[in-house]
Amino acid sequence: GIFDGKTYDEIQKMYPEIHEERMMDKFHFRYPDGESYQDLIERLEPLIMELARESNILVVSHAAIIRCLLGYFLDIPTGIINFFHIYILISLQLELIK
Image (cartoon, rainbow, N blue to C red):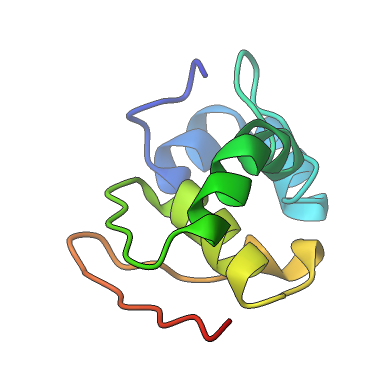
């Protein structure tokens, strides 16, 4: 969206009304020309179904996608995933038992 590359602090200072709207419902909030977590999950659904069939997977991505994947594979309610703090430049290993 139009806020790519901006920090949350910058958005809060420059667009306080948008920041406030996001804080009220982070899961459904959509930045202008961006997507919400709900949109992202819908877009990722075919990928998630494919990943679920595999045994070894390497995913390199940004935090929002990692949150959605972890939410699906760990069966975490959708309204909670957007609160996960995902550190940058970190590797996570998830072992799924089928």
